[in-house]
Length: 474
Image 1 (cartoon, rainbow, N blue to C red):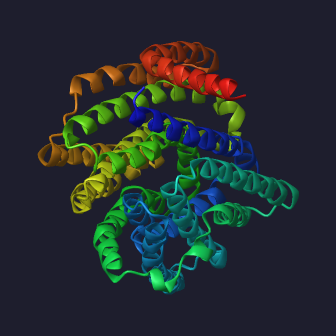
Image 2 (cartoon, rainbow, N blue to C red):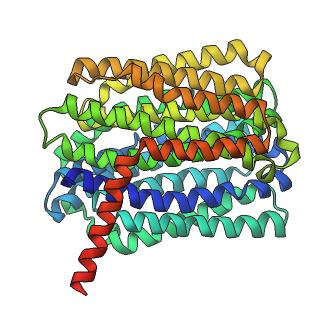
Image 3 (cartoon, rainbow, N blue to C red):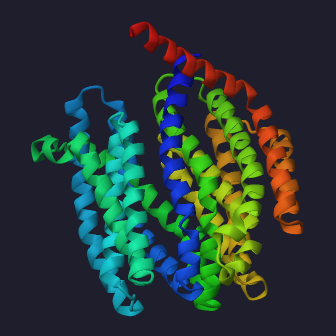
């Protein structure tokens, strides 16, 4: 196995373990949410999360992505922390802008529990900064462990506050803030940003380069919010918070898709950033990776859909039964969205981030327009459908741009072949109950193992090699 593939497997395994432990725990919180929090209250919580995400991403220009990108290029540790010191000047300016603008926004919106929502949004930026810095320093195992520890704290506090004290959805913000704080402390203990950053390490040229690199992410994040977060606002304001509660719970199952796609994307992002400076045949490299990613996500969906068909009635309270109608569209939208992010990472790797904004604007216009057209007829289902279509448009534009820039080739025939089993299991999900979905799940698992038989062999070979090396050393 070559070094690039081995590093990719190592990164994927770390992220997979960390994300599986975290995401699975979150899914098992659904009975708590759906039995103790009404759809209306959960819809309002999801709306406030959408607001927090908007301000915490747009105003910070996702400076953490630029930080990781420039840190990876540096070989010496001092230069890596010079990048961090320089990027923190941009970050702290964004913090001030965030506090002022979000507070002004609240004057008009009257957000309930606003101090908690404000703190939650700020902690998201702290979490992102530490995660990307830690990844750039190769602390992948710590990222996984700290993520799981953060989730455990969040789960414990949610159970205590919701079930024990009946605090309602305010406890979701409190628990998230505490969980993120635990992760930040764990990462700081190893990364030591506070100890190693210094004003003397700030480089004005690096600051300028970071701003130029990350500024497109600001506009892109705003457009991205209109592709995703706006749907929660529209459903809440134009229909009802209750319908947004159904939409939010349906989207919770998308964490399974995010698990599959994000593990691949996070590991891929580091590989792509490194590979871009090592390999001149970019088009061929990225084309192979794109094909593998599409295969990875479609196969994941083929398993996830029947798995949810088996588990839905166990995990979700009866008040939220309408959410079942939304789930397949929500899963497909999440998969298409992850594919857009994956393609966006290629633009980041080749330092052509200005191009991502074009596709994002077009796709968010498609999303908003289609949502407004259908929302009165399909209600919350319109939000899932418009998101899926918008993301497909986004991905199509990015593929066409990358074809011109680096000669990216996407095999449409293979995409069609990969999508057929997923469409089949979706039809079964809608038409049949738990027993039939259970049989479908078993068949889907066998199909996926067959599709990835070569990668599974490589992974087993790598594990055996590691275990054999340890036995020799012992």
